[in-house]
Length: 103
Image (cartoon, rainbow, N blue to C red; front, top):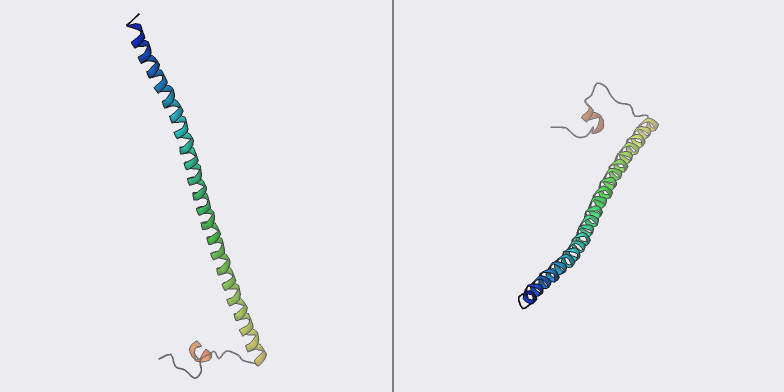
């Protein structure tokens, strides 16, 4: 009986440590999952911000193109209303800048 008690005590200590390790491991897994979730959310926000930035960039470029097209249309209408007509015998530079020389 004297030999049984230390062996039983040792067995109970090992069992208690194993249970503690299981609990600790579960807590660590929960913390790891929380960390992974936070990281995934941060990446999601980063990708969402990148997508919004890209969308805004495309919209800005579309607006710039529309502005340039509107400006060109207005220029053509102004020239048409003023009676301006291109002079085919002169280079384009002289038509657009009659006082300046490309050289």
